[in-house]
Amino acid sequence: MHSANAAEWVLRLVTSPERAASTVGDLLEESTGRNILWFWTSTLRTAACHVLKDLWVFRGRMAWLAFSGLVEFVLLGMALGMVVIRLWTDYFPYQYGPNSTYIPPWGFYCIIAAMVTAVPLMVGWEIASRSRGRELAAALALALALAVPNALRAIGSGKLVHRIETPYPYVDNILVGFFTMALFATAGAMLFRLRDLPRGRSVLGSVRPK
Image: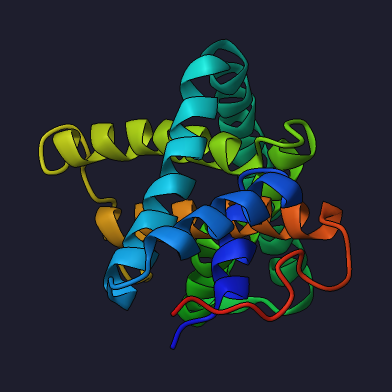
């Protein structure tokens, strides 16, 4: 037995509550004699179609949101890095050379972690606020924009990019970094969408598919 309310919740992320309830109602009728896999595959396919349709129909707007989101990501990341490094070296200096202070290696990891989690989460929330009703389409556009610099880094890895010797660990897992940023950007957009959704009982109540 699987919950129709959960399917409705998923669809409410990409369309209006009324349309989500209507769609789930149709899927409930069609699911008679079918298994849970069919129901959830149909639900997720419908949600994906809504997102892709918004991305295509409003492609100009989405391209602008993606570009501005990428700029915000770079600026926020640079600001975060500079502020943290400055405060750290001023108040908790780490001596790694005769006359050199910086941040400890574990602090370097903390900055990288914030860069791929907190920053994209904030940017995802911000672009969602400028794309009400199409929040996840905006998040997908941002994820595609983030893919471009990561792809360029992957192409240039070992050819155009040379490691500078430092006492810090070399963190350059491009694929993991990209998916983490895309995931948190999407989470930021989802959180904004959930904040705007009407509170209360599901339109379908406690109906469950057979």
